[in-house]
Image (cartoon, rainbow, N blue to C red; front, side, top):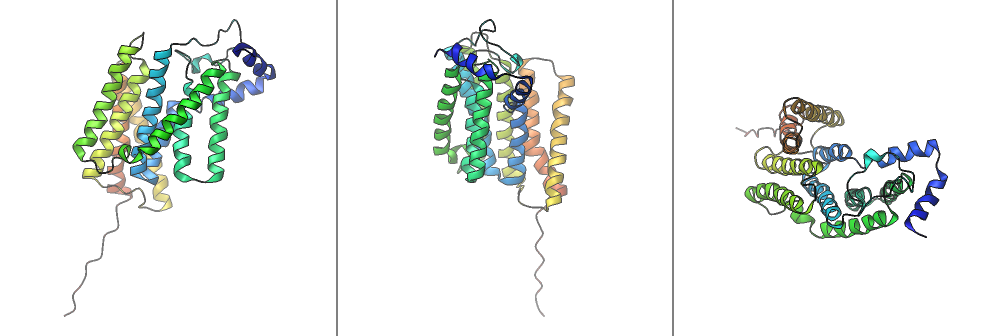
Length: 300
């Protein structure tokens, strides 16, 4: 069967309910979802693993974007197959970002927690997100299969080099250098490869990664926030306060910065810096300060 015939066969089960359902599923791969999950890992679970996930998030997206600009394959034509929710897809087709990036990101979480039920849940979610691109007519079957295959390769490489991306045995200067050099290199490479120049999301992810890694390096050096400290109520307050700060920074800077790529990079840099530096400082200062040790009294 050709790619067109496969898409037409899949779309033969179409219905308004499935249209709505797969529209929701496909939007599980959205930068907002990852930007919400990443701070929670850092605030509530483990900072070292959080730094690793920052790199998983960015490298998953960057490799996909650079590969798309290298292959420059065309998406399905709406004259041949039914295309809906077209706003969730743009640019070139191969490999599918909805197949590659969720496998890398959620696969890294599954590898960390190693719970069978969680692994099965992640596997089903990754499959459905990729399958949704076929149902919606936004990718060819090869785009999705190739995205899964490339995502698995990238994930295995990241797993083997996890200690490096987590910042083990790295000083402050090395961490800050990586936070700035890697996004800068990706921006330069994207500008060279992409036929349309640096795309908007590349600017956004450059700012996010630089801010996350810069903030986490400075926080570890000067603040020493411990995500494990605090009661259940404290953890809930951390989430509420932290997300409120991120939203305020994101929307506040939108009012004063122009609608350009470099301005988006600055805005998301500030948002990410707030997540890994400002919020942890507030948590440690007002919500989750480490317990003080009682003074030892000497007997007279």
